[in-house]
Image (cartoon, rainbow, N blue to C red; front, top):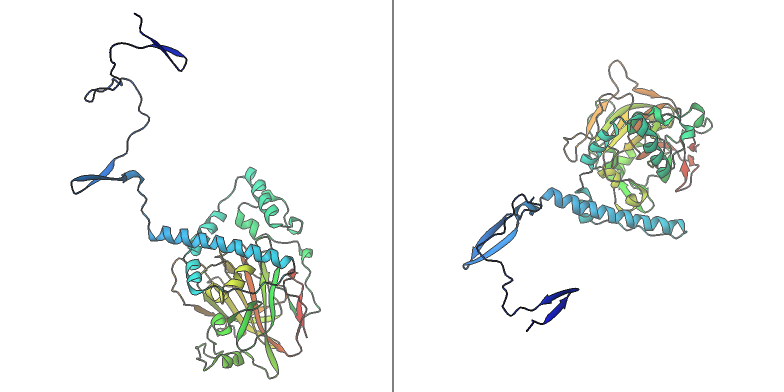
Length: 410
């Protein structure tokens, strides 16, 4: 009698009366002659606990969490989250809604500082120095122009193939007629940018943005005696501010200008004055965009900066170039000894250099509009100066300004 038929997957199988063993022998292996091996089982570490074998993950697949990885992951992730929060605030402000400043707590600032921004900025600086092939220059620069709204019609050289690397493109010069210098006002804008804040300095506190301040003494450092350049300790913050005001009836004023990545990256002398001293503060390189400046109190005091001090016809005058992320390079044209974003630095330290010598007792004279220095990408300029009480700013908070336009006058 024929065995019954079963249909499985379209094939007819005959049920055999004899049982069939579908398992392979335990101690035999199939011949794999000339068969390539596409996968190799990873080696496992084995531990014994109460005579039971406990297998761990594959040795080759173990990820060791190091402190550096943890700091980069947490700090970088939190910085990205803050960027998103700042973006939402900017959108609300564009709608005309006033958003109160929400200051960061100490642990939030410490977490942000854990991001190796100094190392990343040095790496970015080296990348900017890499010469691009001629065929690649126009696509790369065109993408940057489109992203940040750069006006290349103002550039002295409009041909993108002329710039060998990103650094040369960032530091591009302008046509002479692109930025006429205002002759009617005593103080002009030293750079392109956005006005974050301006006004009188009160109680030794300076506003970096509306409602968020920083200490004048922490920002400039101890006052220096013109005779022997020895640090003089002040008894109170108000006395420090009073020491900067050299003429009776004058007040201390300030102005903060933020340079975006698409702005012209060179800065110029804002007035006729003499530079007598330079103080360099190594520090962090956190972002200084308006959103972060609204979030971190004394942001400018945390970041690396170069303070130039001297005097003009009304007394004390200073210009400070503040560094930021990817802006570790701050260059002052007449100061060849200045080296910013050095790998080795002591936290909270600063170094001084005097331009007043036995042969040059007047310092470095600067004319209004003269080239003074440059950033590697874009950052912030802070002016703090002494002027009579009738000095008036011709500005509005948040307005865009260009180098050469008027800041204020008597």
